[in-house]
Length: 122
Image 1: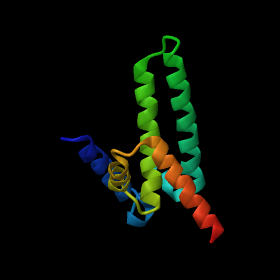
Image 2: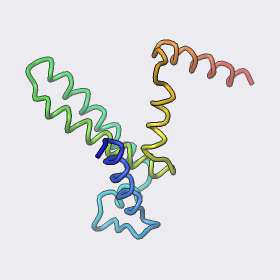
Image 3: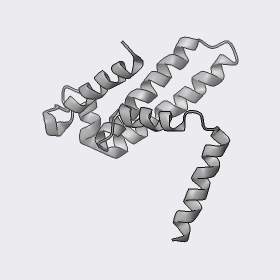
């Protein structure tokens, strides 16, 4: 079993909890977030990102590594909900990471800035 398989299985569960597919907001946390709309799950992503940063900072001062792992898991989980809402999947993210593989992060950032400037000029 690969990590990609685990992410794909979780994405399928999230997909099945969409209200349009019968997910019940009264019994499913995922269905409740999706039912409330983007503000609800985007707020959770912000909260989980902050908690991830705090857990990482705590590691510099003797914090528990498991806390960071847990917060990253929460962040990924809520990000998967956002992807599902917008019709995307973990495979889309993995494809983008694979596309970037072997490219310097500095080069990638410079390319995105250049593309942004070109788009703004049009």
